[in-house]
Image (cartoon, rainbow, N blue to C red; front, side):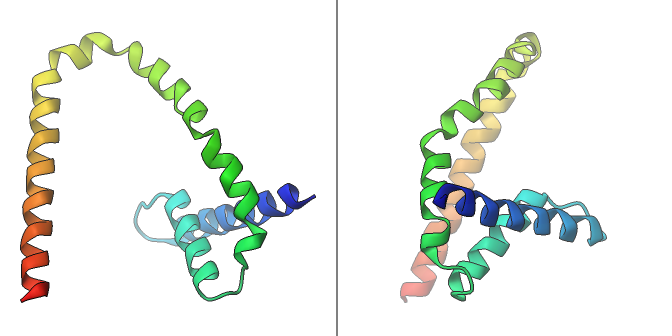
Amino acid sequence: MTLIRDFAVIFVCLLMGKAIATVLPFAFPASIIGLLLLFALLSSNLVRLEWVQAGGQLILRHMALLFIPVAAGLLSYADVLSKGLGFILLAAVTGLVLILLAVGWLYQRLVS
């Protein structure tokens, strides 16, 4: 019974996120809005952690299974990915370096 309650709270937050996303004048992922809404509800103690903990842990435990269809879908684009692999790796490494530099600069600025 607790899992039903946990999933219901998470699902209601997702549905509210979808409703908010349809009202927004710009495109924004509804799932992110739902997660931010759930975070706000948990932070303000309107939703207690016990109401979502068991369901959240179950979802996290099996989250790797949710990525299998995505990985299988990417295999159909293997030829396209192999042609652009250099650009993909360059973008990933450049992004990583820029993020590390920005976080390091921000940390130094906050410490001093």
